Length: 443
Image (cartoon, rainbow, N blue to C red; front, side):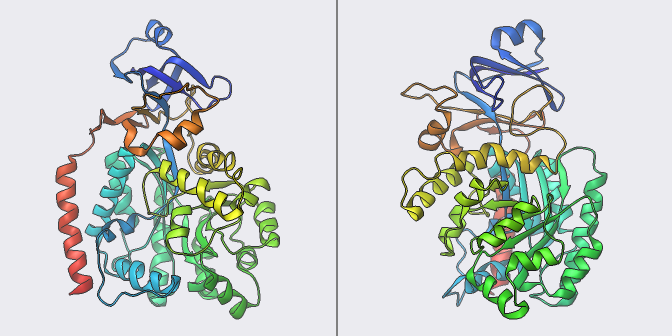
């Protein structure tokens, strides 16, 4: 029995949200019991005790939109790259990187990203992958890294016609093969979706091929109206708005996740709501790419299941929380905006989104839930309880405050020491792989 205790326990369970000197008993991959430290120690014999040392014990974070393939972009200067807009950013940087990625580079991109997730208390990700340099086997390489490091991952490959129909077909088949593999996996650590880049790079022919090869149990993960160019393309080519085109191709639905949704109108929101389709907001990315601010507050107000992601910009969900908070206040010129909506997205909606692909309850510490627990080294100067926890996270915590990360009942990091890999060895391999990637791009 693994016991995590001697800290302020926040469960995200409305029936028992806070225990001043709390503890969690973990058996196998699930939470066995929750109570005071004295109660748990009296009822359960501990094989291992993780001492929170008076810090904050809470559920691990979930990131509903990641980009592992971007890991080796840090510090990269691409010759001739001088973007004049969002399409230039895509083609000049991100598509240039993914066109050169090998399987080994994909693997180490995953190792770097997932180590950073562990260090920031993230134990579940939804990743949207692209490596047109080597498509086949890329999702399996990421899945192997996820299993090795103990991070729960829902994966997909980014289907696109941008590099020709042969690669579009190969992308569809990579998704289909991985989805079938994930559906047979009983670890509750791996899931698959039919990934798509964005409608402006996907022809009707490719839409049809994807639909024909998608197992019924899963949905799609696609970027929607991230840039105004996406909307203009759809109106020009098809005489309809983006969400209407997705509706016509039966892409919408409760298992489908739409990324960004910046340039959508109320009619499209109605379709998303009526089909119970999920949306994920990526505030830092939208600002960094100068794409605009989505109507996220309206989506949440309408009851559309809207989560919070990072788009690969960071692996620290507290950072995404902070940026979303100020973005919508600034955009709406309303100091009251985002106080309730963003933490709902991060702590409630991300868990609901994950619940559509993983069996065990996530984002909560209660009996029977997945044993995904973190400890934050946080000693507040003011009173802290269940009523003001979100404010403390927003203004007082960062991902670097995570000292212990437990995923699926396994200690992945304790007292800032990663237990599932040798970080120095992994980083050395990452630098070796990234150097080869950079050389292949710049010559």
